Image (tube, rainbow, N blue to C red):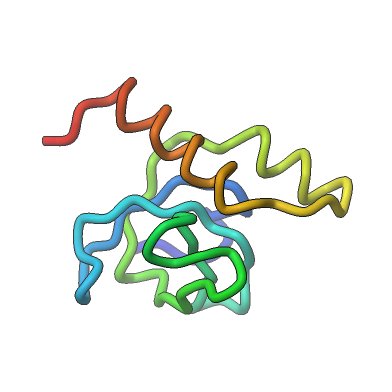
Length: 96
């Protein structure tokens, strides 16, 4: 079972439950040991991220260096950046 110690800002995850089941998101914030905020720049925009329980997420062993770098430098992350990063993942790794 996942916990937030295994997840980091910029990590790619897939929703395992809820209306957004199967969608790929990027973690934009870690709230506590059970919850994170995720966004994809499309359905869930950066201005209104989804609060999601960690147990309802499947992690990819990939982290967006762009998102991590911008977060560390306290720069703005845009919806376009999130969509571009997710599109790169989905073109590199076809969905099952």
